[in-house]
Length: 251
Image 1: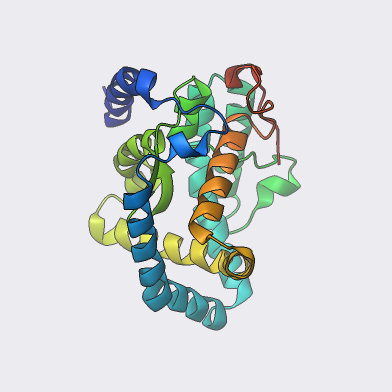
Image 2 (image 1 turned 120 degrees about the vertical axis):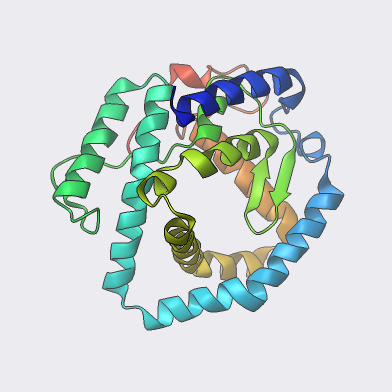
């Protein structure tokens, strides 16, 4: 049995035990953030690190690296992410979407020079919204659990953090670049590219937020819920349909 499937079995077993206590009532942010005091301290730490290190590095990256190069880097990282999305689509019993994403990844890897060029889009293979293991667990009914702010990594939930720990070992990045000396720089580049793409959004948040912690928390939880329901969540407080009855749609 491969490391991925061992990890998945352990994950589903562990989260199943937590499932009863990990479900957060829709729209109940007070009960969904019982660790707010700790989370705010971690949030303040993350903001400080971002201000003195990550944000300046992202600004320098954006200023010095030509846009065409940054787009190529983003495309390669996106192509790697598409491979993990493909795995999760099959885990969510969405074979048609999984095949589409698998073909897209293969075409861009072979014909797009490792994903530098998005030739699959021109061939009609659209990119679906990204899927991760946390979304897969939510798709099958595992609740968020408490909101959690992770050091350096930012907003998460108990469910997503559990899934994320396994993704560290089983993500495509670690399978492509097997040695830490190889995949650690790739992870750093991924962080830099992501932060550079969020520079404008960060300025908007800073300008409009009376309480940035609350704004980011609520935006994160709302987006995660939307992703689990493939962009069409039921009304909060209503019965709604189970996520697994929805069909994933392209962006």
